[in-house]
Image (tube, rainbow, N blue to C red; front, side, top):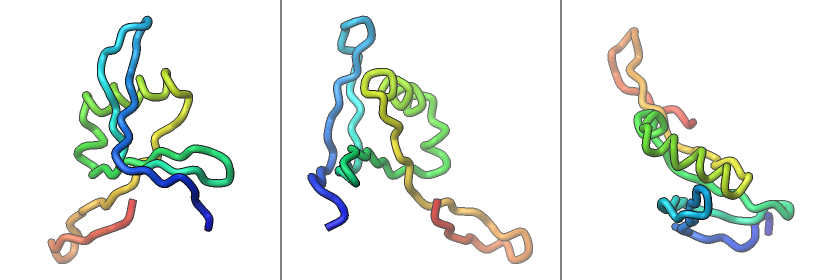
Length: 88
């Protein structure tokens, strides 16, 4: 298989100056080619949420890993006014 050690909803403690300030919970994590990958499903709206942005930065500061954001962007077509789904 391509991936190993698939996990769902792993809670990562977030510390600042050795004080536990909260947790970040991923949607999925796995090992790909020997490297841990952390994925989170986000809409355009939740990607911009300030609480999520802070958790993402704290996660990087604690674990030196970027969160891979996946999701669907919903946009209205200017021509038809209908909603279109597009992979992020």
